[in-house]
Image 1 (cartoon, protein in one colour):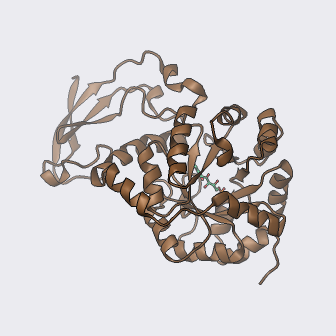
Image 2 (cartoon, rainbow, N blue to C red):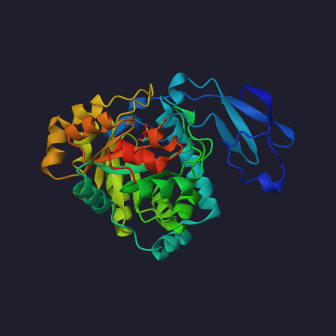
Length: 358
Ligand SMILES: O=C(O)c1ccccc1NCC(=O)[C@H](O)[C@H](O)COP(=O)(O)O
């Protein structure tokens, strides 16, 4: 140990189990140790299999639990900082899931998931709308805030928005459940389902453990997001099987041609959906050209030939944008910001899809 420094933490038993990442001020200041960071041997070892997101800080967390106190590791090199927002989210998520598991053990969640009303067929709902309208099936997103835009809809009523999306003609809904970065919640999923919305629901979560798949099903989700930049194929297979065993489908999201080629090798991938996210998570810029580029690449052609439903995600604002990604070959679109910020989201859906006004 190099130095001792002041920090805040509590000795009270009620705070003993507080997560070590919790940065809220605690009641009594105390002294914690600060130690020098260890040296990294081979960071690339973390990035095997074309997975660009590291699941944990390679040298461990800057703030470490130390009994009922916390220890700050000083002098962490830049490589121990998250390389982009997705990596930052994933690092928090790992700690968050540990905390959730302490409150509700996996076995209890599994039994809740198995006892939940049967999951609805996400892909079938998308295909039905395509047949009816000739437009890509719309997955409309219930999204209050995002890391790139901050609060998008201050007057956020998730049930009202979900009902409006359904009334406007959305095929499916996407519900953000991450609280820290998107101000979402699993409660929103439960409330939307309990309110009688019949569109299938995608749980928009950053999955790093099977626990979250069970949590999604127990909360009424019919599908769950899996991100290829975060998960190697072994995990994609494991989580997609866990989801399928519960009657759910997965939206497997890619950002690059290499990821698209890789996920096409996941056994049973055709039973799920693919998504191309047009948002660069380093710069937050959206470029619909990415959908076009990946769909016309060899793995994009293969996805089409295998009849896999591909979803164009992010940055879709106008009927022209819809036409652009439809021309690229997607069968579905995932739209958040442009719809959620409208006073009348039902009208927003109809306008975006060029459907007749009611
Ligand atoms: O939206 C963000 O800022 C964001 C940042 C980091 C990871 C994911 C992020 N968004 C998740 C999404 O995929 C979008 O919410 C979804 O595709 C809808 O996008 P949009 O229509 O542009 O709101």
